[in-house]
Amino acid sequence: MGEAIDVNGTRMWVEHRGRGPDVLLIAGLSDPAEAWQAQLDGLADRYRLIAFDNRGAGRTPLPQGPLSVPLMADDAAALLRALDVPAAHVAGFSGGSLIAQELALRHPELVRSLVLMSTFARPDAYFRAMTGFWHWMVAAAPSPRAMLEAFFLWVYTPRAHADGTVERMIEEALAFPHQQSVEAFQRQLEAFATHETLDRLPEIAVPTLVLAGEIDRATPPRLGREVAEGVSGAAFEVLPGEAHQPFQEVPDEFNARVDAFWREVDRRG
Image 1 (cartoon, one colour):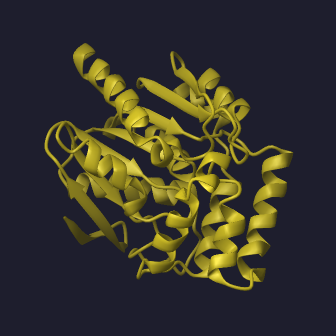
Image 2 (cartoon, one colour; image 1 turned 45 degrees about the vertical axis):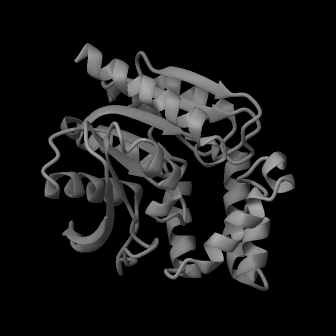
């Protein structure tokens, strides 16, 4: 079930699914709520899942003013309050994991636990070079298909390119009726590429699970390990043979792992 809700000065598109403990799913660069489809389908028998389109993605408009990770974290907080959610397990992927970090820092009372997938606390030289390339690639690509074919080289495993998964993802993205503009992609990217929380990570006090794909080119395990080392008591796991988006490529494995984590958090109270 989807609806548009007025929160924090914008009209945000939100998807609801299931019943149980509240879980907020925060998507990454360019992705609408549907990026979490395998979790919306696979975990709805155990949780009340909330996924949404960040500003500039899907059905949520791009703001006229500056776009920043703290602003998008405030959007997430306002959304939880609008839905009368006192606190939620929060899972963020890539750019969404940066929003999740800021949400836990700016609105700690709303966060019950954190799952940070394909995350980082500050960009390094390689990351800055990569995102600089993406910034002009989205404008220079001769077609939307060509842009996705290039972009997905950083996102999915060689296995997914070989078995048809990437081609299916491209077809679904091209068929999606709410296409992201070049400007929105670039402005989201600029916000995520300037993310910096390393010195503030010790302030996060909720149970935290950091997951990294072994062969992730965009956010390699060294970046996730840095986040886990900064959050007191955080668990860090590397998923063998996986790249940037294991929650899509191996959803059953991902879902089982986060389900076990959330159950343990709830058991401990």
